[in-house]
Image 1 (cartoon, rainbow, N blue to C red):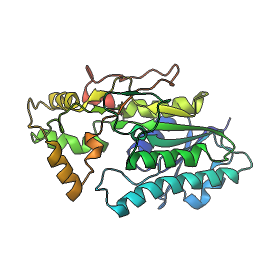
Image 2: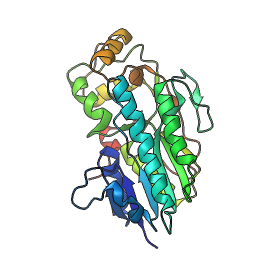
Image 3: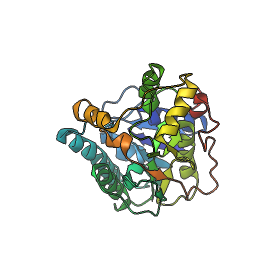
Image 4: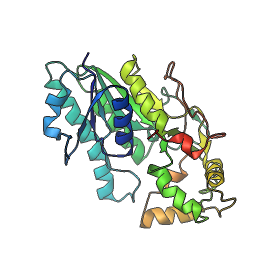
Length: 292
């Protein structure tokens, strides 16, 4: 069996960790990049690369943690939809299409829903991020690509060495790690080590078309910041009022909705997959990361 996996947009935090996980599991991993380095390939060669592959994984998209200017919003949307359309077109050229196509999405699909619990069957919310996720998913699931397709609605990815935590940890160490707004908004999250394992589980199992890639126990923002301060030995930080977060979002970013919106999503379609970090209650920072 050809155990080749092609990762589009594999140069970021998730892609690099996923490359390591799959390589350690015996897969031949090929990374697709707009500016390929040694050992990577360009998007122009995608069709040849995925022909006969076990899976193609698309993680491509402009980072969303930014000021939501009109130009940034267009780039956030187009980078996701257009890369997904390119994957669909490449699959159409294959003599032997890949067995699986896994496309990234986000729990932002559900929007700002307060205390409501979201499963994969829940309806979409409303707003810019929701619109992006819907178009992103449609470009995959509604395509005519002749292979099994799964969309992963990914929560906030937590690791001790990058991503969202890479921005939050220095602030928290400087006693600026207080709750945002009233701190009651829910955050759906997943440890990076679990996310890469979940990708592998989807590759190797008969996965459904949509899976919430988040831990079974979401956490409120205020409780999360208490947990993070405890990890960094900072007993207290002043809260960040909602109006201040909105002002920051309007001037330098990221948009305040990314921290103030409440999304309480849980996974109900992960079958026999076992989360190594299902809850942050007794977790440590080092528990989140992929072993080096």
